[in-house]
Image 1 (cartoon, rainbow, N blue to C red):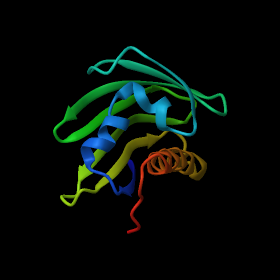
Image 2 (cartoon, helix red, strand yellow):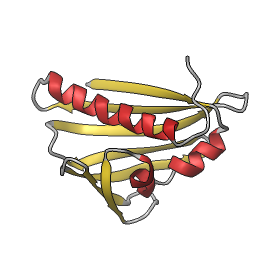
Image 3 (cartoon, helix red, strand yellow):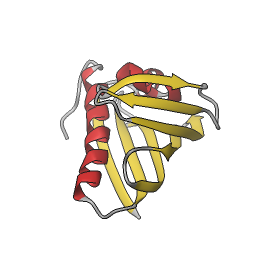
Length: 142
């Protein structure tokens, strides 16, 4: 199993950040690489279809969502990436000092051993975290 974990430290409380990113259907509102999202909703079992700016399409299903602590988990059901058993998690942790840490993790099997696929997944996650950081007042350097 391959695991990728990326983080961004945000100078705002977790609840404020979660308001912005916590809806499963909201990824199109904050991710710079997402051109269009169609979604069935934000309840467990909902499906979203993501079209990226390069024309790729993936279909994802919401597995679990929580507003205390702030996180959601999803699976990829269809994607042009050669991955299987992909489960992602977007989480916003409260740092206890008015700041938060956004954590985006992905666990998956590579259908083909490919550095390019790993870097593609990592790039999508990092770009999403940069988008969140850019849309909030203050990013903290770790």
